[in-house]
Length: 98
Length: 515
Image (tube, rainbow over all chains, first blue to last red; front, side, top):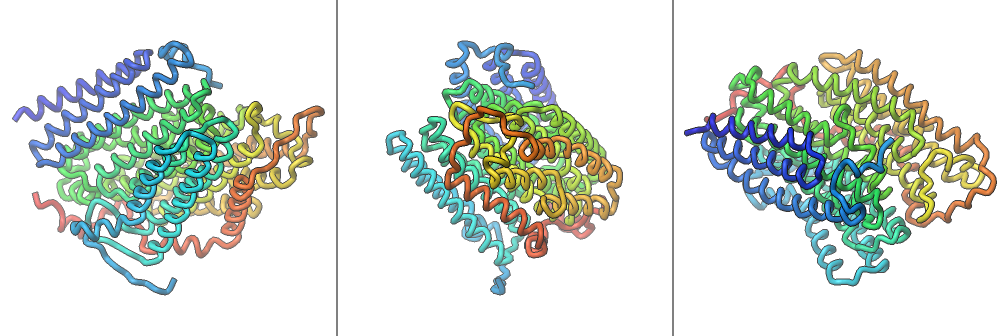
């Protein structure tokens, strides 16, 4: 049923997402990497639901809905920071520290 | 309170499920009505205040409803939500946090020129998410609750669109929050994969009945969930975002994040760990132990160096995360009681301190450093005394700190009386508390013993809402500090959890797993 393969692919995609978040400095790219992590998890849920029934697939629907809401809020926040700084590069976003 | 209609719900019947969710459903219905009302009005200060009053009234009504429901002693069969006193008492903590936040926001928003009326509705929605988190007995409900809360709070952190700092705080909170959600979700997926269920009780049973204590998939899942929760409660070393976000966000919202959001994350954390993972207690205990120890030490040491009070309180809240984690490491139902008492004391003291900050700041002059508080006693004795009570409560000082002292006392007691006593952790807790005296008392000394600098601008007049919040918080802290028994008894009634971890319940295994 290809479940182990799907789980391995999901783990690889999740790791790529994590590495992307930790190494990239552009807010949009970081956000895309977070989305990659969430979708990697969705793949796992779908794979597990072949073993255990529909719960995993229901979970995926919820995750996609939540990710859409999160994207709306996240992009709005990125736009508001762009209006202040004319950049979304995290290197330049550092007035709060101490 | 003698009317005890003990009623057990069958959560597979939709009507009974909605009755068990009544306070939450009423809150959401009210929030949607307010949202529609706000959407149809022009953005103005008057609308903002009207919607604020509506949200305030709604939260107070729901608080009354929750207290009434809690007095009924309801219980439930297995299902996606829990009906127990742990849920109701955490709801009381969240609602108190929301009420204080909305009350402070109305004046603060007017002062800072934030006219969007929806701000107050977002606080209500976030509170609804918290109530779902405290109720969740299924990882799916838990996830929805967390996201409902988090997405609303991302927006609240960036509420002040004119402020560069507020936008930066929102961006940082959003990116780190979404990142931690990824870990949390992957943890949920792996736990689901290992046990075949998302229901906490079923997971707890299957961990034992299917002998999953050494299953790598389950353990990796638990570890990822731990990372996700550690981000949400801001435990070191996953705390880096907290000081920046707390400093940049609008002050009432900072209080809300430091108190209610943290309390909600902890309520869910505690329930998941004790209900689902008590069978793997030996495996996670070490990790929580180190997390608690590092968080206590790091939070309190870095707080010593802060001159900005918002940042100081941020690091202090990280230190308190460590103290609460000690209760989690003990992992008994006594610890769950101590935990609720601690959250209530901590929420009142933290929100009270932020209320004083809101009351003393003005639009051009936020008054956020310790020097700004020099000589407060000479000009505003009432506010200085209130702030001193909040600081002493956070410190855990006897008598003058009210509930703060008892809160730490109960956590210590729970840690020492657990089946596996956490003696070393208790010692670290006491040492970390005495370190925290260094910065809490520094503020008290500045207020009472330093002279007011010549030519300093006068403090603004105290608003009615801020006065009510500050007086109310001080009164509750001192009252239950002197007379804690009724509160403790209320929390203990039909306690949340069954068997202590390490000794998983044998009968549970028999009903487990039809698969």
